[in-house]
Length: 108
Image (cartoon, rainbow, N blue to C red; front, side, top):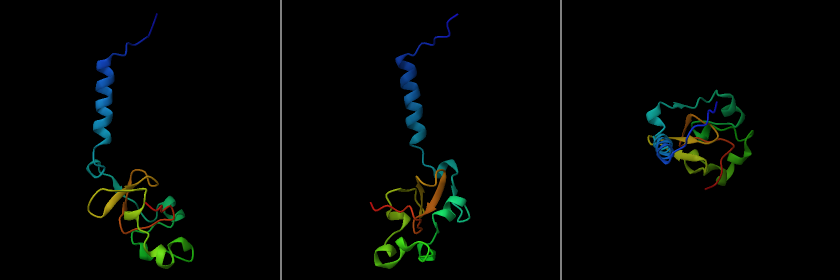
């Protein structure tokens, strides 16, 4: 007995359309929660909603003139979702604050 399933062009097009439609949906509309500063990954990376609250002794990358320019909103990993919040590939499924910061910051 063969369990071979036929893959048709129609099925491929329908599946592709579903993937495109769901990936294009804004994450805020899906009810994505804001990242908590108490999240274990956030703690490890020194994430703060307000970059001015970062412990620069622990994270010297944020210190000084150049460090003061680093914000989530100008990080390569950040995708703006509106209202000052955005997604970050480090914190999957959570929103981070645009004026926030973490040690994973990468210059655009």
